[in-house]
View 1: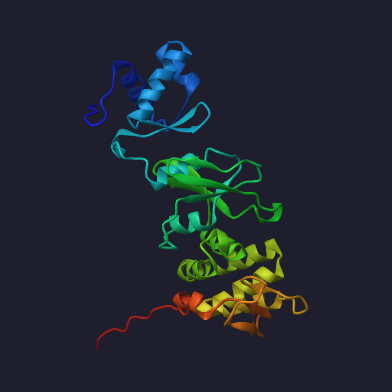
View 2: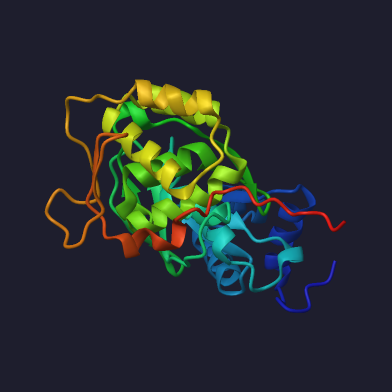
Length: 285
């Protein structure tokens, strides 16, 4: 195996070959000390050199991700940043605007990674990205699973939970307009029964009303029975808002169907209006 673009010393080669031959994607400092049979200080010199040359990237204290030879010297792209962020807390999931970007539900490019975890930690930086910690209430920490990201297993919210999370906290998705766009894009591949089950599990009438109104706004192809199920869960006696509670000039206003105050200007939602409508291609006759 030749390493033309990332030349290695004999000790560095020994580490890289051992890790790649065994398909390792992570390694801890004590393992490198044992592998080289040197002092921790000497191993640190090798580790630092491998980091400079792009073979290792620090995930957490004393733990590193291995950047395989086939990914090249510029392997630390956005996907690798997700893998690095995933080592910050356990349990966790990558969510909100970051998950939406991973699934291609948004065209916005962000340098913030939203990490959802019950563990109380400070925000931090990973490479060129800022990792912001979101501590959810216990009833909302679900709807995620392992996704392969360039060979690393990363916990990411599924499409249904991503769309719901972004509507629940649009400020973590780029705003109400972007949350609406994300729902419209996701709706073409959404499991509507799963989404309804998730909303039942969260048990927030206000969230159901926001979700339902936006489904109608983007004209998503939601099954009639699921829409009726959402409407049955609407609490007609309490107030609910889409957007801020304070007044917004020219806001869309009150919607009687979903009993919702849509405190958003029409132009903010213009880009997502009707976007979820299924497109039918007519055959030429």
